[in-house]
Length: 281
Image 1 (cartoon, rainbow, N blue to C red):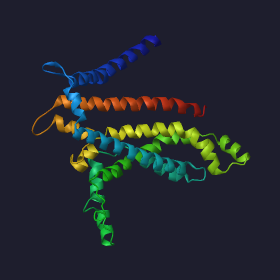
Image 2: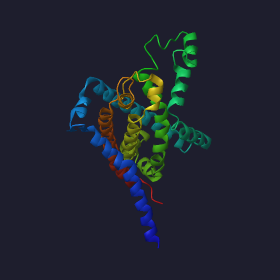
Image 3: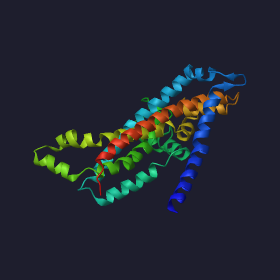
Image 4: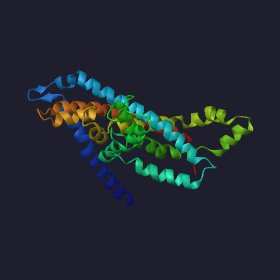
């Protein structure tokens, strides 16, 4: 009886995938290449317009930058708290905070940064009182640089959560063998540790990239759509005050889906490679 029950759940899962993933994607693809007169590529061609090229460029830059910052900073933090001589309380605190901060996004995160680093934010005012005017020297929270800073807030904790199991999977015997052969700590990480962690680091980077590329709420709440991103452009063409262009929105969405499919495919390949180094119980 176990096999039929298992197939029932598998069938239910496939139905959910078909209804909520495959069907909407197919509808978007069809909508992007059709109009009242039949097949057309005019909506796909609009993606080459300046505003949409800028939107994709901004989204790619924001995703690349915040993902890189997240991987480097998050990886170093995870390594520091997982060192054998690190206090256990530190690991508990960092892990707990990361679990919360990784899911803290959208309007609450934008409001928190505006209250802290906005033009009249608490930290901005404190620094200005001691002679450091952030906005006078070119910084602005409401710019692509500010968005990168805000995105890094949840990218770094997410990286800590993702990379922790990979760091824990490093075999102590590898380091002991390297030390017995006379390798320094730098040589161990350059020749053993980092090559072993490389697939996991790359997979984590791709996941962070996808997380930033698809984010919408934080960017819109912080900039009110003044910085063009693909997600905000989709919102604009679907709910514009002057006109609504659902076909253009569908074309933009398909473009994002293509990027995300590539991201997920690469993540799957790299995760499979990284699994070779997992410690077997």
